[in-house]
Amino acid sequence: MYWNSEIETIDRAALEKLQLERLKKTLRNAASTPFYSQRFAESKIDISKITRLEQLRELPFTTKNDLRVSYPDGMLAVPRDEVVRLHASSGTTGKSTVIFYTKTDIEQWADQVARGLFAAGIRRSDVFQNMMGYGLFTGGLGLHYGAEHLGCLVIPTATGNSHKQVELMQDFRATLMHITPSYSLHLAEIVQGEFGIDPHDLPVKKAILGAEPYSEGTRDKIEAIWGVEAYNNYGLSEMNGPGVAIECEYKTGMHCVEDYYIAEIINPETGENLPDGEIGELVLTHINREAMPIIRYRTRDLTRFIPGQCECGRTLRRLDRMTGRTDDMLIISGVNVFPSQIEGVLMGVPEVGNNYQIVVDRDHNLDRLHVKVELYAKMFTGDIKELDRLKVSITNKLKSVIIVTPRIEFCEPGTLPASTGKAVRVIDNRKL
Ligand code: ADP
Ligand code: ZN
Image (cartoon, rainbow, N blue to C red; front, side, top):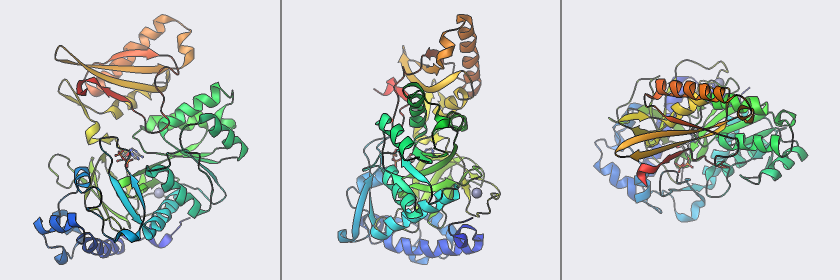
């Protein structure tokens, strides 16, 4: 079943034709902004001469810094009167950037999110508890409007206030939650520990997870603890917000809303486009937006296109799980390490609990990697030798993946800082 079968099962040639039409319109719109009028004047290609989709590749990239420099409205393409809302990024990597929306932009975003939720099997009969931050952050309101558009009953609980979350979930029989992976694990502990309930006994059957990188192992863990089907949802404020790509019921990658976005994968070092299937940095062009068109935006997120067709019949291409951000990468003693590699190993170890933290220090000019790993409570009541064996085993597994040898410290449940929004897993003391 499709929300919009014409678009979702469109053939490639027809999609590319639509993309080209929308791209040309978007470029004309962008050219009316102070930022892009200058950018296009300096670029090798005249935007009015674009006749093929590939020519987009001749235009320069837009970076987060460009958005910062043109703050507050150097990229605004419509009169102020037509703007009905603004959002800002979370500022995970510095000063946040601001995005504007017209009424049409908001309606189209809601439609796009509704399509994604529908693909994940969500229907109007679902009760949708939205545990993402409301406010400037796009996560809360983005899915809120989409789920309402689909016809769900939306409970706008936002993040935190965990006791209330559980009560509302029980009282209004929420069947679906939208939550960060890290908060879902924390909330499960509260359900078990403070309410004495098995999360399986709650009415929630599905979860939409997003806003931060997480591994397949973490998804498995969340599904097992909660007894839910969990679907990955990717987005970023620069491109509206969540709903750029959402998994369908087959959970084999996120269908990118290609009638709204042109997605490219580039080599982050050279800027060259990579062949399909290779991992690189995702670059997005929004081709269906009025207030703030952004061309070739470097997301800094690493992923790839999954080759082949999805069994659901949607022809929109699938993006793989993000393996991290280019700026997440830690260089430890000269070796490139992604936090997602560490998470991938930890979540594959059955004794490992729901939380971990990565700390990097520099001691006498040597980098030291320290990984604090939460174990399930039962591990602290048994044989101490068992813990030693586990420590050696985890150290070796990590070493074989990341090359660097970490120092492992085991922690009891609840002793590491828990997050209700985007988790902060890495503390790099070398930068302080
Ligand atoms: P900030 O860049 O300040 O965090 P946003 O609030 O717009 O701004 O967050 C968007 C970012 O969140 C994405 O660029 C990506 O790094 C991360 N993100 C969002 N959804 C996912 C997801 N499903 N998997 C991995 N990372 C995600
Ligand atoms: Zn599919």
